Length: 275
Image 1 (cartoon, helix red, strand yellow):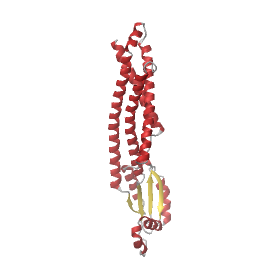
Image 2 (cartoon, one colour):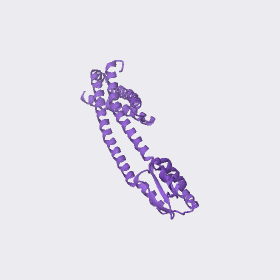
Image 3 (spheres, one colour):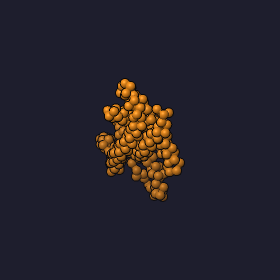
Image 4 (cartoon, one colour):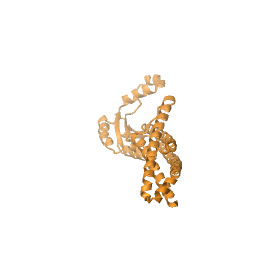
């Protein structure tokens, strides 16, 4: 069938490819937005400040219990001296002030980092509440307002990605379905002749279904290739972005194949009911 109508087949594959390419571009934006939010979320941590005079053994002994929390990725004890050293390195504008200090005003602390799946406001708050239960903990800080804003931003980004992505996918399905229907109509005379000589509907459908699936497969592969070229251009000219994971790229190709197959099935089915 590709040989009999090479121009129409090429136009069909190109249309499918560019329809999926638009979906792929939006997918790249969503992937990079998600990656950016994950990088911001990596900074989420809970800091428990230790009461002055607490034996270091008590704090370090509690590290094992804290590290055993299901949400915790790591727990680190920071001494007063380490805290002052960090402050001198990170706040260079106050270097002279630090030099004039007669005693270290910074308390020891336990810094708790969470696993990626638990870096949301609810889990962070739960961990902070459990840390407050240790008798030697003076105060717990985790940037509550900042974490809650990050949660809202992730929810908004997820909802917008879902709605806009579904809209792009629906438009791609309509365009691809119309393209495949044109290919079926172009061969309506052959279908009528096959019907006259006694061919069954299943026999007539089979080559169209295969052709639709192959067109969708080729269009999906081309769309992934175009998306990769766009990714390279953005990376070279603007900023370093993230490309699809292999499974995501395979999903785009599979989506194109499924649409091609389904579009052929619907178009051929409608045509056979009319003839």
